[in-house]
Length: 415
Ligand SMILES: Cc1ncc(COP(=O)(O)O)c(C=O)c1O
Image 1 (cartoon, helix red, strand yellow):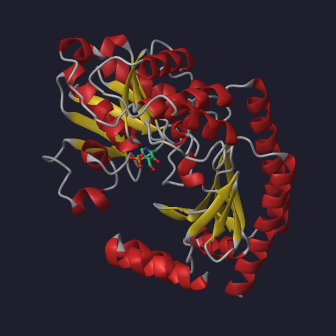
Image 2 (spheres, helix red, strand yellow):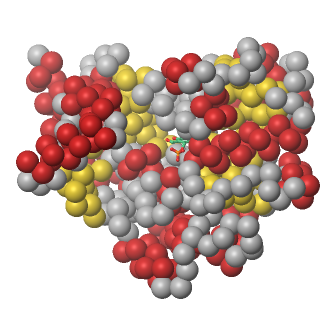
């Protein structure tokens, strides 16, 4: 088994991405995922981990959720990816379900094969609707690695691929700073503000009271669109189906991805209000994606929405969030000098530690204690703590037990 693992790592380093293999090795994480079920994953050498990262929410409903596997198998009995040029029952019915489950006037869904592509489509929509080019986003936020999404993200990657556009076209402002946002919008030349409702790569700092509603009001005043990136915070993870709902914001565009796939078939969606969706009428080929809205994926996504909105799932997620928060507070009481802040909205949590690399150190210590959770890329003092929507009480207790063992291991190794 160990040999198998080494062979996969060597192949990956030689044929896929040497930089990633090297970086994880340096972090002390030599994971090659083999078996996976529910919220557990097993390393190829047999080591078991509870998955608290869920690939950003892809596995919100668990790995290989049996209902979703059955839906996919059933869909494969009759369908394939379909032909994106034509109307299809699977796409149309998923579009209808998304319109029903998204806030305000959101109605039309443009399907994509991933979140970055869906963000690109959102920003293209804003440029078409406003006839302006400028995009405002939050410094050190993240919207994917495709063209416009990359340019709206952190300059670490935008600069790497020369994607920032002419100076002043992609403007970044600090999170939770309404004055800075007002300044960026004041010129009346901004097409869209794109915001993660709770920015993951920043370690899930919560929106200050009134911040998101304030941004929406500024967008309305200055004729810019509000694009809600709910790729990580959507689908019940924050305590409501979409995190923006808690902030009284009805976005012009909402982007969902990751968990929409059920972890089984890639799919994402850009949901538009009719007011901004003019291009869909003007030229239906304004955005084309061969695999976006693959029919078998649509069937899975529709089931994801149905499972996520079941009253029992909503109540269970609330209980799990509270049980974990209580447990984390108890652990914090015992380690006040180390675990300095618990940020939480539902199951979206960021734990800040008393060292600039604290979240990164915890990633390794937790890995060695049987928990897979990752630090926030743009603030490594924070650990992203992202349990799944269907976590039960026993799983929450097991998570807490392993987490506390990880804290002890981390503090022990630092001593
Ligand atoms: C908030 C957010 N937006 C967009 C994306 C891009 O999604 P994808 O990797 O599917 O392109 C991600 C991916 O991590 C994300 O976390």
